[in-house]
Amino acid sequence: MPIRILLVDDHALVRDGLRMILDAVGDMDVVGEACEGREALAQAEALNPDVILMDISMPELNGIEATRVICERLPAARVIILTMHHTKEHVFRAMQAGAMAYLLKESAGDCIVKAIRTVMKGHNYFSEGVEAPTRSVSIDPGSIDQSPIDSLSPRELEVIQLVVEGKTSVEIAEILSLSPKSIETYRHRLMVKLGITNIPSLVKFALLHGITTVE
Image: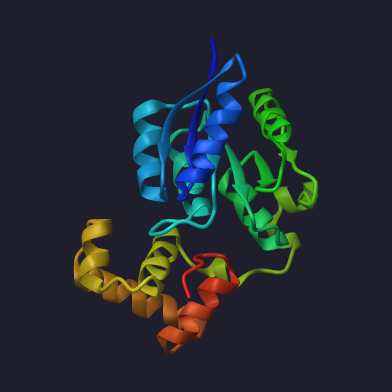
């Protein structure tokens, strides 16, 4: 049986390039594509792929939060992060969300194929240039300095991304299937938690912590 793969990236050229690499491998089959996090959730549930190649920087729902939800709903799925971000916080948050491998986009095609084979065997994989979290960190998040993000719920992280990307409370409510009043509550609560009083500061926070790349 071929390894069934879902590609998730907001750039069509990247998806096309990955498809070309994987189509050339006899036992790998690209079964679907998605251009943002929410579409990735829908595609993952519909297609039940073995492996998901996931970008981090995507509109509406970033790859780390998409990974968290997918791993909760589809525990057998193996997520490989493929990104340009390589800070310790990005790597730690991705692995904490459930990713099994972390690759930089500059990785060669054979590295991507090797990562897919490695996670299919149940092992982690990190490309050159990525510092793997230590075993103690992966088991005990308290062993490293806590990030302000740790005080936020997954829903609050979703709301932050949508707010800084310019969505109104009504638009966010429609996307998340909540009431505008609930969105206002989430928005107020998360800003209190972070000690932030205005949107420009919230945007800076989101950029600093890789929640969004929109400036």
